[in-house]
Image (cartoon, rainbow, N blue to C red; front, side):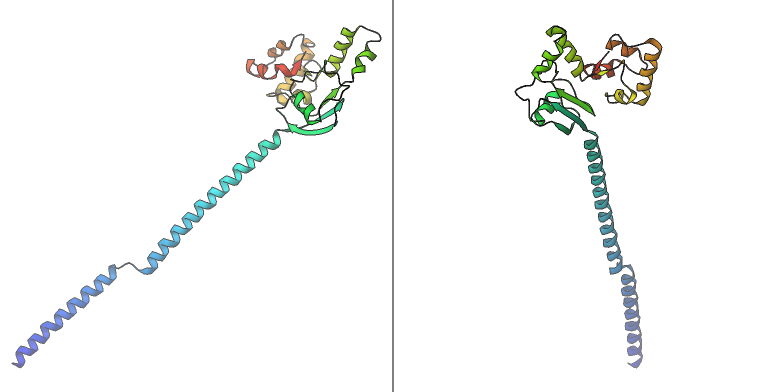
Length: 219
């Protein structure tokens, strides 16, 4: 009887040891709570990094947009027969008529027959609206038609490609320092431009650029 109990006890002990070993083995494969914490921290860090990159991209886009807006602003001087003459910061796509409106509009004594209000503006431009008596003053020694032509020449806001400096030429769309220098060189070699179309004889000025600037230039 004692022998049987000893054998039974030995078997039970062996079974308990086996079960304990299995339990320990199972625990060894169980995920540690620290592992989950590390995964969560890594995910949070990745999300934070993505959010930072998005915010950085947005700031860069805002900077570029603001820079483009700054480049679109030019300064013009409006004088003569307008209600509020002075210097104005305006968008470079405006026309002379728009700027006159910004200056309060025309006075009752303004003479706009010599002003092309549809002409484009450029940086450092002077827009002078003449008085109705200006034609009479000039016409003392010539007829009214010649006087209007003289005033028109004085008021012409277009850039003379035959006399403009390199700085003035660079106010034209698509004309940089290199092309402006070629225009000067061309004038020195061949003389003043007779027609604005002759500008296309200058290296670097093709039909595309000419079509953009043709309304802003004169011989």
